[in-house]
Length: 188
Image (cartoon, rainbow, N blue to C red; front, side, top):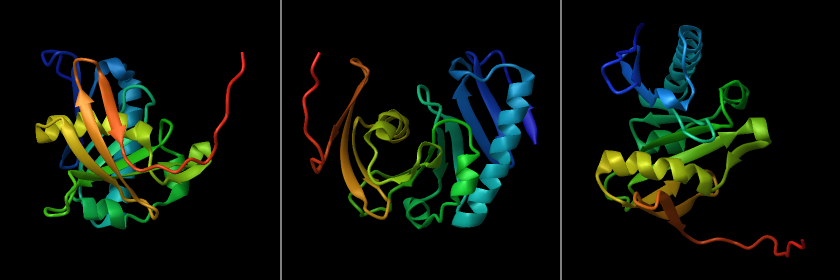
């Protein structure tokens, strides 16, 4: 296992975990050798357990900017859908929760699949999570070179999200079907 932190790459840090390269900007909170070792060791072990449980391969691991969720990209959307989560292990991950994502199968009509687990907050798996797609839209937009994306949340209930990334406004617009579960008014 090798840790490389080149200063010449615009304060970006690269970690080499087995055969996978992990990247995230230094500004997102990991600074100092002790934090690097801790993050690298914790997520290397998790990456190995994830590969064992999904029979897939991890392509990328990074932290999201605002919530500190751990975003893990695996080789296939089918690996995402077939993943058998181990909530006790997910509970030990840093951040609010764990996002698993992968490219959608060709011909499916989707760009990517995802799932979100947050047992620390009492939600083992969010059925269809809009906030997670605010991190996934820029991630997949950059990978696929497009701003309009169709995502499938591969939870047991599942759901489709139509996403539009507006980089100038720094916004992600999310469309899809929803069910109203509560209505109310806030009084000042």
